[in-house]
Image (cartoon, rainbow, N blue to C red; front, side):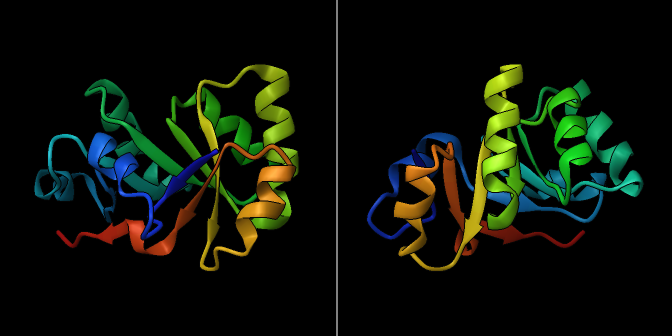
Length: 135
């Protein structure tokens, strides 16, 4: 299981960089080269997603439902972030269709790690691992 943003485990971020939540394409220039861009899936963000794809920039898509999970996998997301109630379904889809993306669940409490690990979820993301960037 991948654990991102936990105080005991800094190694993931040192290897892969932080997750940077950006509002637009121009904000990418304010992120370090090894960062992973974080955006919410939306039709309004398709231009950002296309830019990330064309420039081989790793990104995480926050999704809301099964259809968006499928979109995220097909759009080349490295990580797909889901709410806890969608985690098992998302992981089953990822395993069934052999997604390249890892399924992450956003958590604020480390007590959730055990439950999600037992469900076979790829990883968890603590909110402090997402840095908001303004243009």
